[in-house]
Image (cartoon, rainbow, N blue to C red; front, side, top):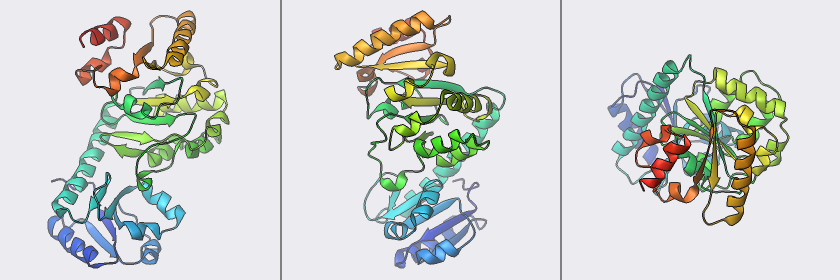
Length: 325
């Protein structure tokens, strides 16, 4: 296993389990990895050195201030719990599983570094996943189009209503809107700190309240999207949006690709997509950059056979994929 990207690990656990975990990691990790163990939240907070990995008992984490919790959520935080839960490590499990999680962290960082080097001189592609009605599975639909290292940014107008553990949430789009409006020059660094790794991609959740998106002007969005396209290290950024967002921007102007989310079960959604299609057809010059898909095809697993097929977004290409099903 490769742990080359890990220099420091901080363990926060008040019981005997924390001591045993320290001994286990010291035996199985390289001597170059420093492992610090704290039994009180106050002791950890007073420690000035930052770590690549934080292994914190669930109760220990809750004792930290809200500000410190938010900071740790932006790092690689693994909660130590007594139950199976995504993004955490169950204390009943074999600690070998924890080593696998740490190794995955190194592999993920290495993949991102390689991808950034490959894309250094290539503009980032910006794709909007647009649903005219609120869709709690919009992120899941978008992820069916994504490749390793891609970014999903939630801009749903009803706010984030995901089912993830509260401890896995980092900053959301509402926090980022504040910095976009200020035109912070290091906005891409701020974005990277807020992103949450999820199954080889990175995610920023929608804001809690829609008005964060409405407070940004068209000029704010233009500035931010230009930053992403010209300066970000990502291959592709997917913008998951609802109706409120579209009311404030020109999709054809800002995005390299537009994916409309339709539904066979919602007549109103289909009517809206019909009308939006007409507008896009009238205003768009060649080549066509928009595509209309049905959410049921994605969620039921019937639309895609291989990830390579996602690269063909022409009308004929999409028609062929659906016909094969």
